[in-house]
Image 1 (cartoon, helix red, strand yellow):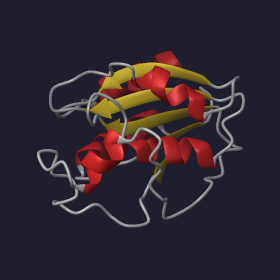
Image 2: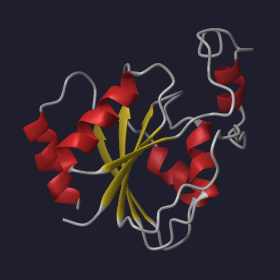
Image 3: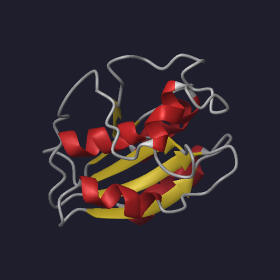
Length: 159
């Protein structure tokens, strides 16, 4: 197995739980993608067209500021990248993270949590945010409780 990192963005804690379970099962390091200004419940109200998340997602070039810039990825071959699905794709803060780091020659395996949709065009929409030689692979939806054995088996297939 190669050295892996589980990087994740979680606005409500759901993706954080999945990321921690995956990191433990895969023996990977863990990195939280944090916004400079945390999201509030009102910010996440998708029914309000003026909520922060709605405004960000209606403008795909939106790049929310990170609390920490440029994670050190030099030691990692594979990055499991997790996030909730918003409006059928990754939140734009994931693009901010990808654009703040050097992913040259890395393999990114996506995982997500979702209340109802799949990955859709997420991998294709994230690809312009990384170097041309970065591989982005659609992984799994990690909704609900996952078994450690199942997560470990999945991780081993992509490492």
